[in-house]
Amino acid sequence: MSVIKILTLNSHSLIEENYKSKLNSFVDAVIKEQPDIIALQEVNQTASEKSAFDIRHYSLYEDSGVIKEDNHVLNAVRLLEKAGHKYHFVWIPVKNGYDRFDEGIALMSKSPIVETVGFYVSNIVDYTNWKTRKILGIRTEDFPDEWFFSVHYGWWNDDEEPFSAQWKMTEDFLEKYSKIWLMGDFNNPAEIRNEGYDLIEASGWYDTYKLAENKDKGLTVENLIDGWKDKISRTDGMRIDQIWCSEKVSVKHSEVVFDGKKYPVVSDHYGVMIEV
Image 1 (cartoon, rainbow, N blue to C red):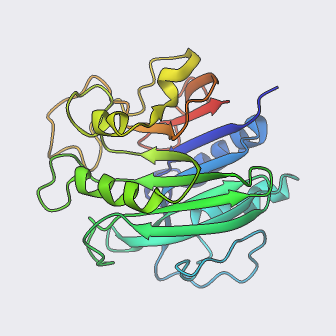
Image 2 (cartoon, rainbow, N blue to C red; image 1 turned 90 degrees about the vertical axis):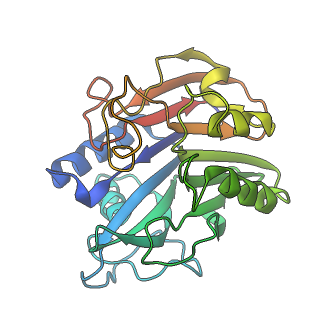
């Protein structure tokens, strides 16, 4: 029996074609797998949608903003509850997406959330600028001594918002915390040397994929997607969605999910799930 199961996914959410079908596929997988912690990125809601009032198991945070009726994580939590599975969650908006969405990041937990923290990792803090970046973290009742962060970083070679600067802000902020999990879209392929991936590893963090006793190829993006089309002309696959830990842990499994093999594709990214 696993001590903890963690899932991360850049959901792309409302932007996806056949969104409702993909939402149901995501919820079905969560019901089957029962992850303790779920980190989500690109968690959208329509900015013009009406505010949601019936919000259960929601951890209000100072930067939460207004939850709208079509908020992706709210949709998922409601469907899970209808199926008899309670998940607590927190969501914060980060920036305007595609000129019509509040794009944010979220965390879901099977146990109640006892503390939440969020902070900017970009120098740009303009809600209308798509390069604005934040990360979000929680502690839970089941794992009170561990912090779980959902992250979505910029690119290594961005002159205005380079990953190296965002990583420095992250490390400076997290210095006061103990055991930490960083989960999400790092936008730094593990296959490229002397860039973001190597910087994280050189900073003393542990890639759970490398630690895993059992693993697959780990690739979470197989085609050119938004954000990468102007940076590379082709790809044989990238492992940009990752789970890192501040401590060396024993990882039983690391597997790619929502890739059409292990559960249907629900986003332009595949997810990553580990058992520790």
